[in-house]
Image 1 (cartoon, helix red, strand yellow):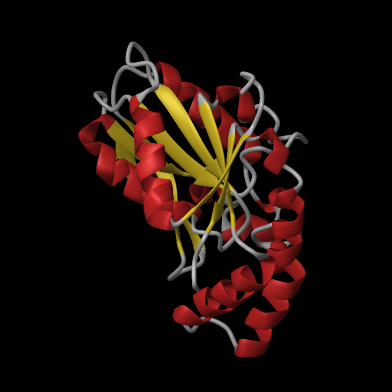
Image 2: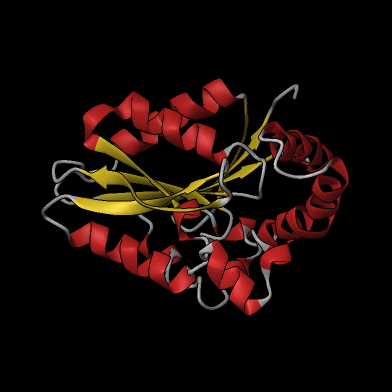
Length: 220
């Protein structure tokens, strides 16, 4: 396989995790490295990313892209609350700058997270320890080639695209939105169909930019 040829695999979530653990352990150890796990909403990126960090132990740290949602107050000001989750409702430039700073940091760094309970950003939600060497980040838009996202891909030492069929994703997202009971079933269905699945289709076009594409074999 050529160096720039994408590796395509069909794996169960358990096998995908085992494969990614091996790949992470083969990365350089003389510097900080970043693994980026991309894919559409509802494909299981965060589950795999957090499991990967847990499997690697203290050497690894989880860096979610979701913490770089625009603040809800800013979305209200911009009139884009209904689009929350779309690429233009994130601070993409700030996310790229944060990943860049992580690669060269020598001390602990805190980062923002996102709470689905309140549907807003939580500042200083996690701390990256100074001794962490493998950063595992995940998000929908890591591999987009458009502004402001294009600077992210060159910062990734390994990029992975997680894929799940569209209809299965739709059912997952409907369940996710209903979990916290913040909105009506009608609102959740409208948001999934108008925003989430549009984002899924957009993100699918970035799949060829990943080093590895994994089609997840799941029953649900």
